[in-house]
Image 1 (cartoon, helix red, strand yellow):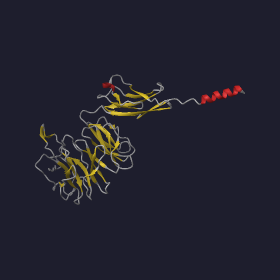
Image 2 (cartoon, one colour):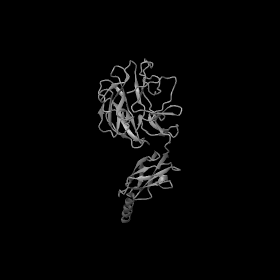
Image 3 (cartoon, helix red, strand yellow):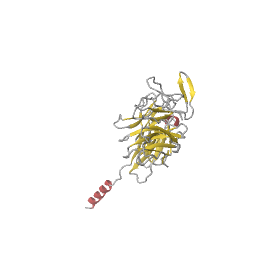
Image 4 (tube, one colour):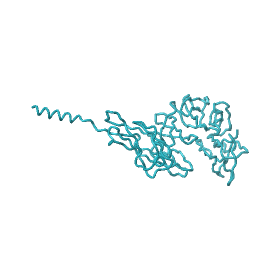
Length: 362
C-alpha cells in the first residue's frame, strides 16, 4: 500500500509541471517605407519571473546603414527604424525570452523604397472596402496603408510628408485620424464627427468639416487634435476648406447665399468674403502653391503669394459668369456637382484646350 501511495504522489507531481514559455510579437508582420519606423511589443507567456525579452534584428547582414536600427528598447517593447535604402532581402525583428533563450518570435519586416519623384496617396476598394494606399508617381510600388474592415477616405499629406491625415468610420462614426506615411501609428484626433482634413502649410493645424453644431461647419484644430474651434458659425452649409500657401487664409464652399459659392476668410474665421457671387454652383477651391511654375516650353515665372484660387463653374453658368482676371491661368475640369479638387504640389496643371480656364484673385 505504501508503494502504491508513493507512485500516486509521483504521478501527481508530474502532472503539475508548468507549461512551456512562449513568445509573441505584435505586429507579427510590418511593411515599411525606407527610413520609417515601427513599434513592436512582445508578450512572454508562462514566465513567472516576468523577465521579458531581448530584442535583435535578424535575417540581415550588415550594420544599421544596411539593416536599420532598434531604439527605445525595453523588456517588452522596441522601435525599429528602417534604413535609408532597401536591404538586399527581408529581415526580422526577433524577441527572445530572457527566462529561456530557446524561446523566441520573429516579426517579418518588408521595406519599400520611396520614389525620388514623390508618392501619391489614394483610396481604393480593391480589397472589398475603402482603404488608403500609396504608390510612386509612376504608379509603381503600390502599398496598402490602412487595413480596416470599415472605410478610410480623404487622405491629406502633412507639409513635411511624414504623416497623413484621413477620415475613417472604424469607430462607428466618421472621424479624423492621422498616421505615419508608412501607415503606422494611426491616431484618432476627433470624437464628435468630422471629415475632410486639410493641413495648414506650417503643419501645426488641421482644418476640417463637422456637423457637431447641427450643420456643416469648418473647424480648425491643432495637429494633435486639441483646441477645436468653429471658424464659420453659419446656419447654412460650409465645406471643403483649402489653406492659402502662406497659411493666413482659408478658401471654402458655402451655401449661405442660396447656392454654392466660393468664400475666403482669414485663418481665424474673420474677414469673410464671397469670391464668386454668381447664379451658378461654384466650389472646389484650390490655391496655387508658392512655387516656380511652367507657363510654356522651358519658360518659368514666379507665382506671387495668394495670387490665385481656381474653381469649378456650375453647369448653368457654362463658364460665362466666372471672373476672368489678367493673371496666369490654371486649367480646370468641366462642371461637376461633386467638388473634389486634386492639388498639384508644384503648381503645374496640364492644359486642356477643350476646357475653359478660370481664375480669381484676391
